Image 1: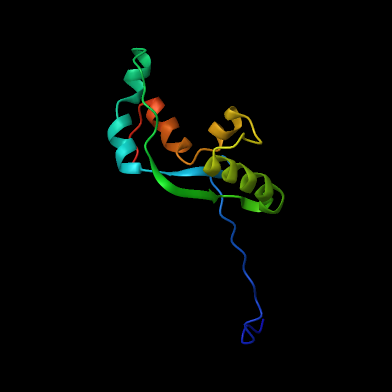
Image 2 (image 1 turned 45 degrees about the vertical axis):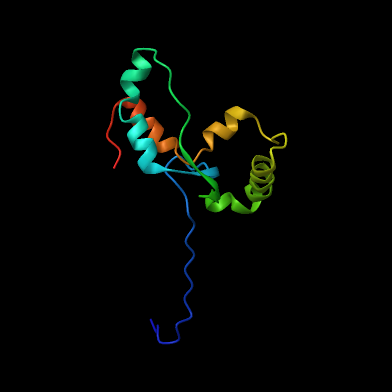
Length: 115
């Protein structure tokens, strides 16, 4: 096999383990780690849980994977709606499932340490 022509191409798609894209504010990991280190016990004791700390005016659409061409327009409209405070084109439940900190939250809810 002759590789001297450098004719090979490689494509890498960003994705996460649950294969769902991310959209919304960029989470503030350090602040969330300080706020939620005891989330498992707070939930077990039925104590109030504060909203997640995010960076203001810093947003992302990421981890589109192989379905980016079809999901990007809807996610772009969703992000524009978040930024401008307009009605969302998707439900709050779906938006919650597309949150950028969902993997961390799952681990904190199980009582696991997130590094």
